[in-house]
Image (cartoon, one colour):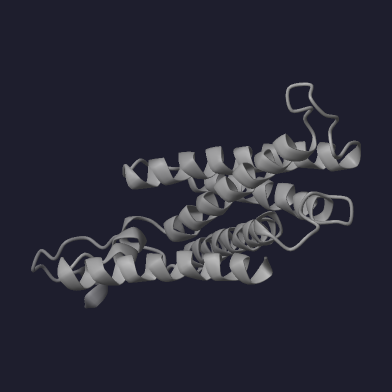
Length: 199
């Protein structure tokens, strides 16, 4: 099972890399370059959205298989904290997908997304996934076994950390640039006349 899981993920990454390489070679379309040129961090946000969709879908499937009565024909396999944490995984996956979709949409459509709003979104998602990883991948959580939910939760947490780090770097660069920029002095236009102070 683990070999199938790992090779499935490897196939997804490899096929995506081959598609990007084909587009760049055959049609001279630099997908990564175009994304980076449009806005900072859009590649990170895109990867984050994809992983959040996996978190949401996998946890919903686990909840349906283990925490529902299957039409009343049988009792749920799991109960208690397992099902509560499954609902938590569905919730944070949905929240992450919606927020990242909003950010990507505004960046792609060349809308002016205020930096502090993006910064606030990234901090909230980092905190949410920090708690999510702790509860979902713990001993009694649905992501405890090695599988899609385990890897996608940790990947989402790492990507949210990278987004926050990038925002902090931009904030520090902007703050430093504002402080270190030389003052603009206004000089009168040259008139060709000799000033009294020059004599």
